[in-house]
Amino acid sequence: MEPRHGRQLPTLAEETALWQAGYLRVAGLDEAGRGAWAGPVVAAAVTLPPDAAVASRLAGVADSKQLSAAQRERLFDMIGREAVSWAAGVVPATQIDAQGIAAATRAAMQAALASLAPAPDFLLIDYVRLAGLATPQRSLPKGDSKVLSIAAASIVAKVTRDRLMGELDQLFPGYGFRQHKGYGTAGHQASLRQLGPCAAHRMSFQPVRGVQMSLLAPQARHER
Image (tube, rainbow, N blue to C red):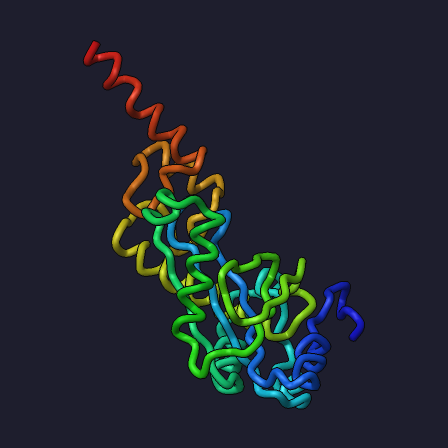
């Protein structure tokens, strides 16, 4: 399929080949929030029906980063109606700090898979490879822009995470989590300098750690 307005559109080519090989429950996986300074990392798994016509029914599904918030919300509902099953896994900032973002991302994907019913018989994953799984898998660079089930997972993960960031905005007002979703915008940097980090922040991430250290430095000098 040719890109529309310069945008590559995902296809069912990977899924179709697997369906023809006998894998009828193919799940696409992707994450959202890996690079944010605050909030969880969220992964989603989406199993589409083994039906070529689902591509037309999911017209508009693409890499979540290429879509507006309104488009993602509309497509989220569409994916929920069309998918055989879908699930999301959430790993909070504290676990990201304890494990590191790469391990936390894999943990979120494992959590999504654990909630997926029926269990998939093949996995198509954006970039990441999950060790120790009996289920066969394929890691695909830029899979969210090429593979329809991964693109669907990217939308589910993004919408789920954005809603969680809205909840964190209510719990920790003043940081603007609803607007920037925890990413390192100028407004987020300004609120960090003014308020200091909160419990939703990833303290192991350098920008947050730098602000925390600068806030602690005057106290340390005073104690000496």
